[in-house]
Image (cartoon, rainbow, N blue to C red; front, side):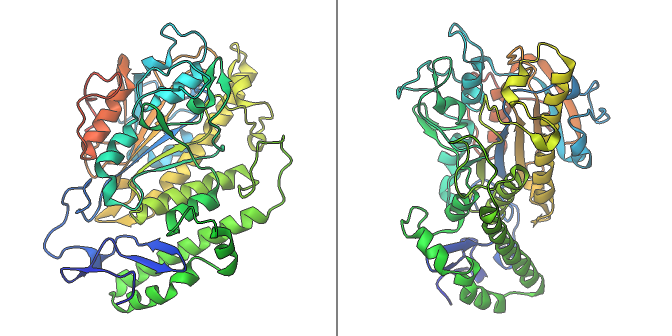
Length: 453
């Protein structure tokens, strides 16, 4: 038996990892890990063959709602232009209309809708209006789950993004930058920063010591993460059956491929951007950046390194341009479109580009076998924003999707419309209950959301 391989009751433990040179490579679910007499135990606590996973994806600056919202409810809803890239996944998701984020509204605090939107998205709490260090929001839905079930995995939760975290200064009408850059709040005064650098995310997932100052030196000394764990992998291969050997080989190949893609991305010549907008180690090409982070999130779920994640497709109020889809103006700037058709068309292009990245994530999750279905079947992946129309800074009738079947607890393939101003946090309560973390109240919630199953 090598250092990483553990056995429990005659089978390989789900906690088995491959180790070497300060590196940990967790494993996907193998048949050799499953009890012979029982399947489908408690999904959130870790005894299940196929534990449930939960992710929250945030897109900034709202949506061109006329091209987002289906005109009809039910299973036969027409696919709208923005949702068109999800055609192949319409049976894997719900389109949810009518939800609102009241605490993103001013409620007496004046301007600052962008800061309040991202802060309130998962908390349902009114952000304290301050640009100083005395910021305050509320505990977020993902962290409710992480605090109750996080001990089952190496990482209680994972916080990733595309734009690097900035937590100081005034970013929006007297609100601290921490609000625009943060979805996850461990408690009302402890924001959890997002990591946008794929190499650092990779290290966090697969390093024994993610904060080790010798990490870069160790990275130069080894050709690949997998080179450090081949001895354990070879020993494990000899103890597996044919299908498990194939699954392990495919998985290790995907890890090596991902690491090589990250290394290649770091070597590409950088795009000239204004000073401070790009950090070494981030891919120069935006689509590759999105897909590297998506692949890392899939690996984190596939290997059970974590079951809970947040992913910011951009900080709220982001003024990034999208020249790859013909939009050279800043995103936030054109959302103040004053109903000009040419600007609304450009917003739609950005919205559709983001949905294409979401479709890629769903493709990857659906390609991974898990239990008797796919990894996507075991997931609940929420996608949306706390702003609807960006010009009006509207916080009702939000653009929200819920993908995955939550281990069979969600009836997908429909457009469901709720009564106007139904709290968004009611959706989070319903997801938490299906995750094994029933919660009586979260922020401005009023109860569970019906018609999900």
